[in-house]
Length: 411
Image (tube, rainbow, N blue to C red; front, side, top):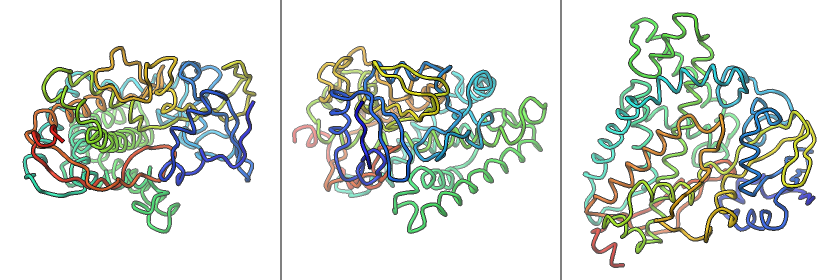
């Protein structure tokens, strides 16, 4: 088995300034299961083939989520401090007990309909203010409108509070990027976490006093009131939903705009109605693979890809590599907006498939629909600035110019 010392997969700079796709493609072809070490002794196994990644996702007996889902989440094989209380770092059977009220209150058909209407309204307002010739940073001006709509509905807050929460969660995920964290990344991370936790705790405390339970936060507050969920569990899972939803879709939207600019002929198929926005959305999700990987810990020896990963080992499941696997996708390194039977793993698989996947998919599809209906388009004018993170693929800056849609399609 290949062992890589001082692996670039640890480096946020590598993901921002280099070509992680090509590096992972080489691993997938020649060493689909490999070990990646660092000078300080930290190491993990990397799974890069679709079949192996999927196998790992659905094996909840031998692979645990309770030890942190990010590299460096915990240096030693010890449980995350939120294990058993926050959905993303909780194993069965507690996982189901936490997931059910979140899914019921936050991602029911009724709530998704409300989310869709709010996101569409926000996008239409943002796009409606733009004129041909306007130049802007899409990442700062338009992309945040997607998660803002979700926060307004699920958390029952206004645009100003939604923006505040977005800023804090963005720092939590991008704390190693100076755009978000400045010169003190760890201090910024801690401050942002405390800010979000305090914000959500205040929301729940307020709902306890009003008894209002017509959104996710209100429902969780009701669970606290009737004794079915401890308050700290409600707060932690409010944070879980906020971070998961706030940081994926804005980056996916930015990468989608960048992709459209480079694939104008294919985009015309959507704008002309020849390809459905639902089909296009699935390809944007596969192509961008915003959440690059998740980490697990083997609590038993785990056999995968012809290798045995010993108990006590960290294992990383590389979504971005699985979504370019030629064993599953024809022409995987080509963006095909009409790709059929798209089995992308952007949201994972199994019981730990992202609980917010329906909302995130709805956000992106709504965004695609609004862009397709818009009489204008975003033309990228300068190379984007990529986020310095190995966990989240995204853009911290995307300078665009608003152009006439007919001119854009003819370019």
